[in-house]
Image (cartoon, rainbow, N blue to C red):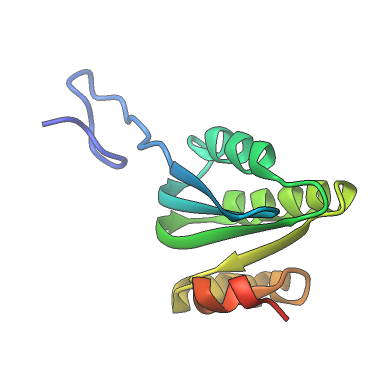
Length: 128
């Protein structure tokens, strides 16, 4: 059986499970990135590249975190970097599908005062 994050491979080394990012353009100018897996120091680079590549200048990027199994300060910093880049590209950045666990992280760090969070993807699409 292949190793997953937290399991040892045959050599005893830990292998990260990459974050899966599915990018969908639902309507022109609105892009949804569905993230799934574990977002940490070992997996953040791929997620960041996908999110930054998906930023629609002058549009809306929604990061759907409904499939995230693990999230730490690396993920918080990632969202802040994407927000900064979105502002530079005149793009609105929204975060959707937050679990109670993720909401708690954002409240503790104060990020809930910086980024617009939505309980569902449907709410994020509407914005406001």
